Length: 166
Image 1 (cartoon, rainbow, N blue to C red):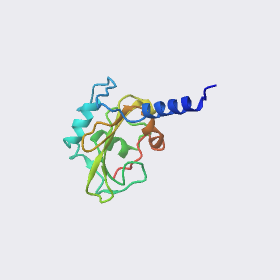
Image 2: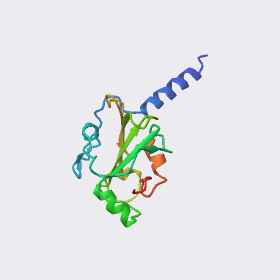
Image 3: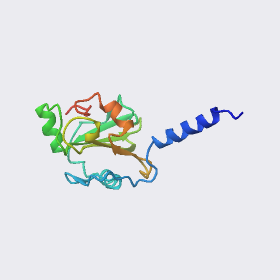
């Protein structure tokens, strides 16, 4: 009689890989533009690589993080996020965008970016698009609406925003 254990282990490996990062960098949730951001995976990758968020309100410096985003981070907030956070909104409006720069322990070597974009009205994980991409090539990214890897930690925040406004 054939053992079920090897088959079960194989299926667990397949499921584990399916729940991990996209491997081709071509994800698209079909949302289109939010604010001035193309929300496809390629669009977000281009946005962060070009640093188009760098003039937004930001945390004053790179700091240690409690989250699983590398060792050190710095978060940037678009105007919609700033307005919503200052108002103390329990639910943020569509167009709220935060970009987290990810750094190595030295606080200088950039390792990638994490982005969250509010794409639908109301509360809940599926109202957010999450992205996390890594240098140097940004080809094995986490990307998706209500992404299972991201929403678990972000659920502890106010409408999935865990970083306070500086």
